Amino acid sequence: MIFRQLFDQVSSTYSYLLASRHGGEALIIDPVLEKVDRYLQLLRELDLKLVKAVDTHLHADHITGLGALRDETQCITVMGEETKADVVSMRLGDGDKLTIEGMALDVIYTPGHTDDSYSFVMPDRVFTGDTLLIRGTGRTDFQNGDPRAQYASIFGRLLKLPDATLVKSVEDYVELMSNLKLANPKMMDVAVPANMKVGLHQEEIARRGWALSAAQAIGIVGQPDVALIDLRERAERERHGTIAGSLHVPYPSLQENISAGGMLHELAKSTGKRLVFYCAFGERSAMAVQAAQDARLASACHIQGGLAAWKTAGGPIRQ
Ligand SMILES: [Fe+2]
Image (tube, rainbow, N blue to C red):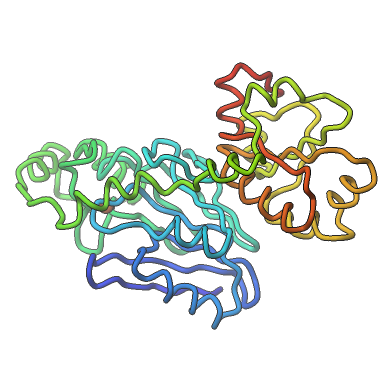
């Protein structure tokens, strides 16, 4: 396994790069915007393909590198389903798996530091964001933090010790955390608004005429000249349902499918069908449209806002 702990001195943020092998897929947890060039260099040196960039929660002390990494590598951006970030490509819930080639991390919801805090568990280590720090815990006094929830997350989920030698009671912990009277992080006024706007700008794809609104999509789905393509992972399809009749082409296999000789490329060329991509929120599908257009599939478009917008518009879902 490849495991790199990376540190940003300005914000005291630890970030983690993971992969199962050289030349394979990689995952980064809590990347910092100012360090993106460094990450890209490291990915090149280790011959890794970044496929997922993950934030454990909406950070207040630094600006996330998620958007920049997506723009540089076309990776998927991932956060928990409670996040107030405008658009991330994939939202995970408690009990889900965070997967890349050769790795599957257990996803656990550990609110308290913030109400969108998640931890990711491997057999021999756990990434806790700011829920649990080295010799401390994250503060709980802003961003809907809650010391009681934090206590439950730490002691009920992260430290499931059978014979815990914990002297601190929940009441002591709540008392302690409620009276720390910490100043806000220096970058909070900048970082929080910036981190809520990590989404890919789907408007640009729409401006080029490559987007369907959910209502337009509801009108054309099922027509014989339309091939609807679902870019999500299997677990997302099982959990959130699918649009009937859609082909499943997971985003990581997109490129081989749209290149000359690929299944989607030949389908579009030989049948004249219009490729209509969709995903969870329209971000992967917007990147897919750009890639398909680059591969000279001029009819390719996507459903803006993804399955979330489709559901809001009253589109039928197959569970
Ligand atoms: Fe934090």
